[in-house]
Amino acid sequence: MASNSLARAMQQRPSRNLHERLAVFRDAGLVDQIPTTWQLLQGQAEMMPYVVTPDAGDQGRYAGAPLGHPLMRTPVVLSQIGWEHFRVGHGLHSTPGALLKHLAFVYHEGMPTYDVQLVQTVPDGLSLLREYFEALEAATHPTYARQRRLIDLVIPRASEYRQAFLTPGGFIDRAAAFDYPRAEDLPGFLRPEFCSLTGFINYCARTFPESPRGVPPHRLALQIGRLMTRRFAHEARA
Image (cartoon, rainbow, N blue to C red; front, side, top):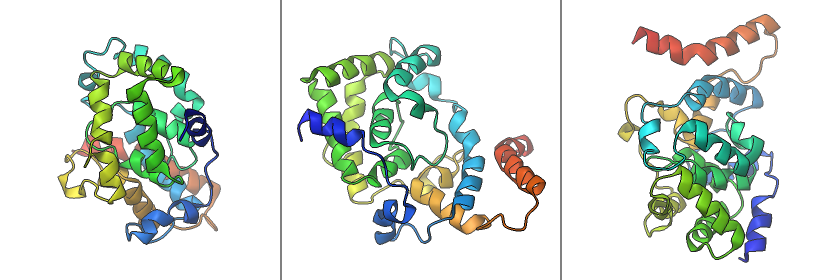
């Protein structure tokens, strides 16, 4: 695919039909039921604190990058991804370009299952991810050469990071084979249901009421508030 075609593909608007987007995982037996909008909203409220709060290893992962400090790297990332960088929900409404650039400009330790699965819901998503990372590695086109220079400022050993996706048997090949890290192999401080898109989808469909019908507005607000603070209440009891 020529660079212009790649750029156009990255700008396409994602389908908002969840059944269509998640068909790849339903067909693979990884998603049992598509949650309702209300179920997704509740799941996002509970997941949000895990997304917006940096974890303990955040600073170490960027050590050695000239602009690795969050106050310096965030403007660089924002300049490339735009307002979509601030999305903290399930991510299914993000454009392919935002998803691919997020994976390229934000360092992920280990296989970034959730984000790669989001890419898989886009038509030819894994192929786009491979082509984009290969374009960054080659740096023969001015656009991708410029982006690579910026990435090198915010991610240490950025080429090694990209090769973890591109190498035979790497993250892209594993995703194509639906070979994701097992929930039991994740660190104990992580919530498995928030570490993969399929886990999140199943959690929402199995855990939350399908509809807010008949519930007073103040009770709905209290429910969302409880979900948004559940992480901190749990950690306080631990």
